[in-house]
Amino acid sequence: MRAARWTSAIAALTLAVATGCDGGGGGGDGHRASASPATKAPAGLETFYGQKPAWKSCGGGMECADVKVPLNYSDPSGTQIKLAAIRLPAEDKSHRIGSLLTNPGGPGGSGVDFVRQTGRAFDDKLRQRFDIVGFDPRGVGASAPVRCMTGPQLDRFFSTDTSPDDQRELDTLSSESKQYADECKTKAGKELPYVGTVNAARDMDVLRAALGDQKLTYYGASYGTYLGATYADEYPTNIRALVLDGAIDPRTSSTDMLVEQAKGFETALRAFAADCAKQGDCPLGTNPDAAVTKVGDLLKQTDKTPLRNSRDARPVTESWTVMGIATALYAKETWPYLRQALSAALTRGDGTLLMTLADTMVERKPDGSYSNQTDANMAVNCADKPNPPDVASYKKAADQAAQTAPRFGPFVVWGGLPCIYWPVQTKQAPKPVTAKGAPPILVIGTLRDPATPYKWAQGLASQLSSGTLLTLDGDGHTAYLQGNSCITAATDDYLINGTPPKKDTVCR
Image (cartoon, rainbow, N blue to C red):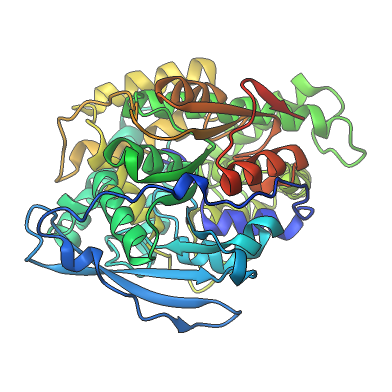
């Protein structure tokens, strides 16, 4: 679980059990922020910026098209790739503002699937005024996807012990991680140098122009905030409105990101345990501290004896168990699933529901195949930031994480190990993003967010020269689609009118 995964699959799981989004938002003409034209197409890219996508109906009232971009922006006349895009057209054509481009996170999450599954979960006021647009970033889904591992190979990779207790287990983990990197080099070596956030941000500007928008209006969740912030730094004057929900701090190093994320899941587990202790069907008892300890005991047990799985032949190892728990912590609406899963595990030794939740995280299909989310996730994350040089460096970070996040620390940190073997490495150190010259940018943070700790939202908002922080005093990963009326109203008003909420606004 490298960086933040808020993908279309987890979004669909959340929205299947969540209450509908509600709330208001301002009216207004919605055009003030788009008054001045965007910059001209960069030299050599005029053909890409001037293209008109051939939109065709693709079911559910939606339209799909491909948009061409250069594989290598330094050689725009060379190889081209196609980006898959989808849009839910605005319902009020006479008051349409433009397109609302979205990204669900990952990296590796399909924006096409996200809009297809959750496009109508956006508030009515936005769907009246905007085309809701999703796209698969390069390397993802239907956009020149990176493919590395087969289904059986990924099954073995995810089953590998990510809390090694001895040298033998560490050697196995290292071997599996190296094989992952080697498979990517063999099967996708030509694409890997160009699958990264900077190029994806450049693609977004091509998409903006191809959609016919003078300025970009954007909603990014989780990793989508890093993509959005990168765009803002590259094209600050091309922005109309930018919402960065469940933010990542661009200054954070690759290993620090993993350590902090582990702490975030630990915080979310404690919030779940406190809530569970109040429920009549809590399998962890009535004492929140004891409940957290009981989860830790379950993980130790599965490290030695995996749980049963009635769906297929995979035993539910410690790694699968942690992943299943983490998946259900992404949204408070899925906590009942976690209570059921833990009850089955603790009373019957049955890990089937935990495995089902984990499969949602990694987008494993019933036939044993996977989407390319995991491969794309590794490809982007390993190439975006400098990685530790050796296994010993990861062990140091994992040991550090285990002290502050004993249930999740090793699992999260060791998940990044393939990056030390990655064939594409960068020397570009993480840096602050200021986006000087951009209009107001809205950053949203949730106090008990498991995957993107609240401190990251604070950090990003403070870096941006025009950043405004909106806080949700709540649980779960990201805020806008969780149905909080205060968050919905403030975000809608900003996206429609370009007016951010007052400084230090907290929604409850």
